[in-house]
Length: 159
Image (tube, rainbow, N blue to C red):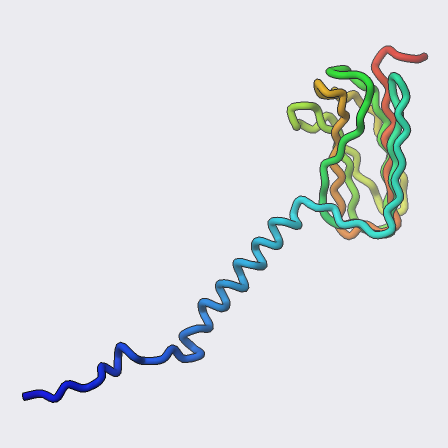
């Protein structure tokens, strides 16, 4: 007859090597989640911004010391579902800076890309949404000492 003894295979303690792959996957999963959360963010340092809205137009401007990432922003206008004439000015001492004006459907109306140590200006038309918001996206990669300005006026308004 066989003696009944402890089943050593079932009671084996996990070793450090057994636990390490789960730990690595956990860390990788956490890093991926953080990257996804930050992917839609514009991280800026020393940012100063201002907005001036008038009945048929206005402007928004921002300067920063450093910027990386991207963000969609809106400007409240007083006109809904209207065509706006816009002038966009961008500049960055170093790095990449791009500003995209967006139509209500999310498509890019036009885009302006900064060049190092040079101010770039572009003019075009963009539509406001039903709530009268003008949408734009700022995209920066290692941009330093830069800024942008968006001047907008309802098409056909003023002179």
